[in-house]
Image 1: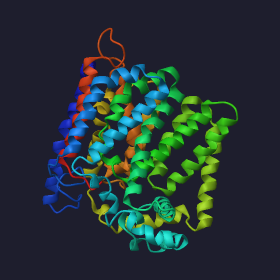
Image 2: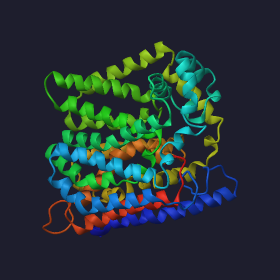
Image 3: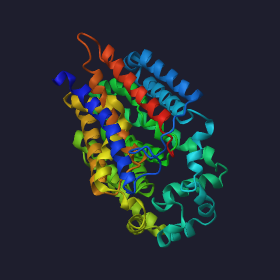
Image 4: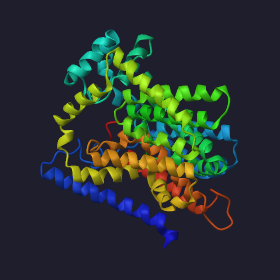
Length: 441
């Protein structure tokens, strides 16, 4: 029975998708407040669309299935990270522009997104900070639902001539796909040889994760990159020696201190950072980084934005909005199903082989799952987690490496035919979702 546990887990998830869709449609018929569109649990419309980008995605997937497992095992570590990032970027762009290039920028120009608020924030940053807390309902949905960090970043880019949806999309996609590198680097630093083995084995599944659909183009992909690199820098500072270690710790503190001002959700998602001191049993670098996080909170407050005031204002806006009326029980189940969609069948199957994971991968994934559960059970993350949980999914999908570490008899890790079937399922899931569901991002 244990032999088929990964397949059983993946099948249960696959069956749950249409069941949750049927449940959601029934709730819509009862006039319950759900998501926009007719594709629950996904936010979006159930429309079939395909184009040249779909063919490009099929081509990228075919190359990864053909050469990916071998290259992941044989390439030098630095080269592997570069190739992994480049492949993840190609995969993300192909999925995001499956029908037209404008699909990469159009989500960011939506009236509910950040860009409509950029001109005002660029002209009067202090006024923007003040009114975001005193009158958040005067701003677009995503602006009033988040801290000011990303809006001010876009405003700063606008001031230096890098304004507009094109540059914003480039920022989001590059940062989001770079999480592939940050996560692999963290696993290797914390897990040593065993961690590198897992990271190498998992790389093809990580690159082909369906989460790439929402990396192009959602601001949450940028948040995922910031949290991933903050954690990676902390791992560098904790495992290295000399002056460079403290430079890495300071960098980690600054990035992690910025994270709560990008998304309030990163407060509890930052739980994954604790894997670094837990695995290494070295707490001082984390304490130093934590002090820098506190200093960052104070600095933002003195500049005009106190985090707890922003949380209170956002909570009030959320309580008065449609999201609070979404049925708790449905979205508790739907969010779990969506997490499976983010990490793909290989990620879901890998959870059934947990004992094969090195401690670093296991701790990072476990803490990410706990953070996701906290958001779901807390009731504030009701739907749309396919983008909201991007900062967590990148830490969970490497558990897919457990499937490659034990495929076949007498085979080298990642060389088994079964592993390629898992990678095929990973790619097919992403292409199917992108083809059958038109998402807002």
